[in-house]
Image (cartoon, rainbow, N blue to C red; front, top):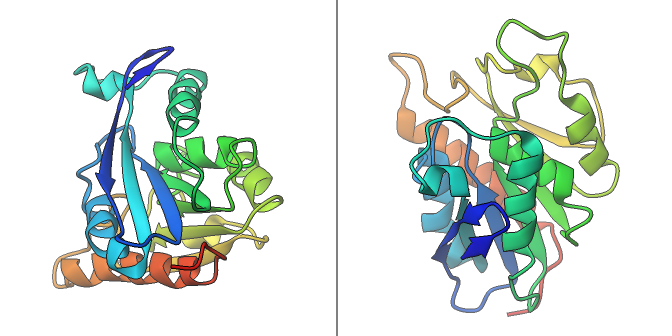
Length: 207
């Protein structure tokens, strides 16, 4: 699809009788094939949740560096605005994609937000916090944060108590990769279970 900042794409995994539509953005260091995003797209449709993974124009064009946040938001807004509203919309993503979702969800009419590996700050720079982005969404909507225990962009303990829900993935880093000796599949399963449980509480269209 066309956006004001270039061509973008949706990767769609549709539920047979959807009750919710979950749109997920990717991070600055990866794309729609990230393990946690792919697992959600594979498993949630059976739960009545259609999953659309959004690929930003910069990545589709083969560029190596993501543009500034305003450009990411512009492409995302344009693409999400084209989606049908036959079922309630949940916005989310991982890392940079989670930030985009938090910044835009209230204005785009979402009913909830799923933030995977929210980058609270750059590694080693906790003084430059992105907490206002998360807090702004959580003040308006239900927000789930799924954070790796060892995330260098913001460990779970660095997040202050707030209206958002926090689920910690044991032994996982920012990419949800676990330390040696621990089961990688268990970490991805923990992400899926957390999102599934959260979305089960979000009112949707009866199937």
